[in-house]
Picture 1 (cartoon, rainbow, N blue to C red):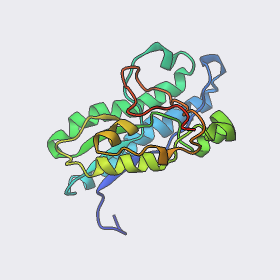
Picture 2 (cartoon, rainbow, N blue to C red):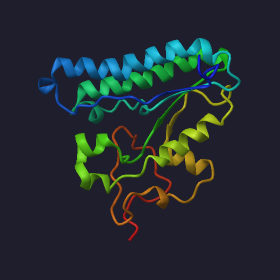
Picture 3 (cartoon, one colour):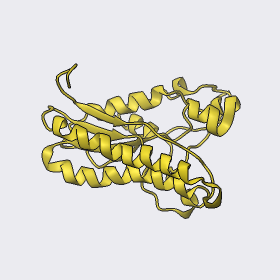
Length: 203
């Protein structure tokens, strides 16, 4: 506020991950995931809301998944799924709470792995990075959301490539880290969500 004079968008991107079953999840890691993912999203949104009410097209965007209550998303890592879905529950609740204020609250989630430090360090290593899309696809999808009228587009759980396809994008090869590798599906994408382009290797 002091530097820019206002807040137009709030992006809740920070996340902590540990993919362990219940008995192998240290309670300090449980607390960390819930403090960063769910509590962090709630708190940052809470303190942005008074300023967003004064913006012309205010948006809150959580990088969190669709609320798909399938057992398979919980059974292998209950604590992480609970923390991540907590962010999505903030979308569901705050979209309704803030609709009369004209503040959009939406979620954005990648269909495939995204080439980030989390993929390299916590999940799949350098080889896994080759099976990902670049961060640009999420940035481009977020840009599409922020340019939508906040009063008309809220409470949505968006998948990056589907949203971009609906916005007119047709070149998805530019987002591939390595076109010769199949893309790695991300967690939490509902089976009912059909990819607009093939995730198979291009060469």
